[in-house]
Image (cartoon, rainbow, N blue to C red; front, side, top):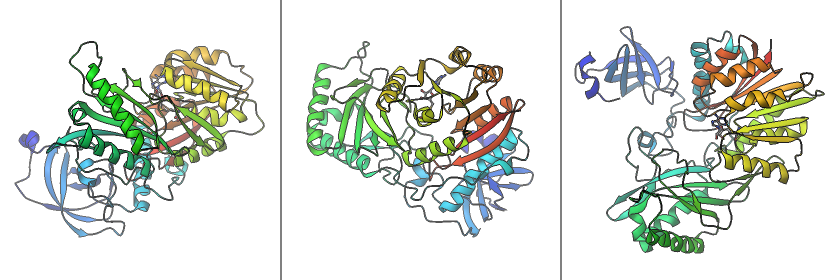
Length: 467
Ligand code: SAH
């Protein structure tokens, strides 16, 4: 928050600090205290700490402050393992030890469900969070942006709230395959492919923990040509680069490029794969998953496997189960449940991900599945119409951060399945959608899971049964 922009409403004199005790956390893990009827948000402050706070901005009744001095320190305060923590913003909780990170996440989900979702007695329904034994090097995918400094290209994250690239790179969250590939790539471009320095706006790397192989997609600056085709010279340079990179990086399995569409998460409208291989294979439990670069896949395979086991445990035994997996991606959840069900129907919007799901059914010999490509809110009625009312119907929803369309939630209520399992990476939209469903559904349990250690993000699995 910028002090200048808010100066008119700023009611503190310059450099005047005040003291407050941190009593809880915001939805982004900032410390919260109160001062003269105002709520104060303090980044990197921990519950129980007494802090001398320098106010830097003010909006309505909220003051944004910085730590000027820690007068009483929390026993959970720890030195961040990475020096970039305050600039890159990806790891907002590194000042807290892992126990406190888990407490913060539990508080975030509880607050969201109580305050936004108006759920009563929610504390009793929230289970202890599923943690990671080794909460580093878990991310299988990263988008890295490029910057040129003194004639050298480097790849890193964007600084929080800006478009500046942090020119050191975070290595703590990624496995060695990704860190090595990034190093080799930078070296090669800076030594032998100078022409690519200017046209490369970033790279997307994903790695399979099972195969120990990676996919690399170069993001190329929007070319001047309106046809969105690359100049022949640039394309040839990219092909030569690929050949050279293969000689230093034998973990490279998929290689391609895409015209940068300016999105934080590139959408690959113009993806061109140059490698013979087109998919990575991951294995979770006894299921193999083929994944195209365009398809969504959970970023933390270790925790995803735990999530799948947990979802399995939510299903009743000795019932004829019919499962609809909406927002199904490459089929991650439904494929893991197929052996327990009579049928599984997948609904997913990205055609490549639906193709992956069909292939994944084949390679795992799953014959009781149907795949539908399109918007869940449009297709749900038709898909659920095929279901015999006598069977035990389970609907799984795992939407993107923005949550579900009301049209889908209404169609689910009309269909009235026995059980709804809502998997969410955003407590705020989860709370909103649960408020829509819970007049007709009993909220059985909330299982938080730490899919994104060191960040304030938290995954939750909510199970509901028909009232
Ligand atoms: N359940 C999967 C994917 C979850 S991510 C897994 O665990 O891996 C959410 C998925 O929803 C993405 O694959 C995205 O492409 C898809 N999606 C986004 N909007 C959608 C919509 N309106 N209808 C159906 N799928 C959608």
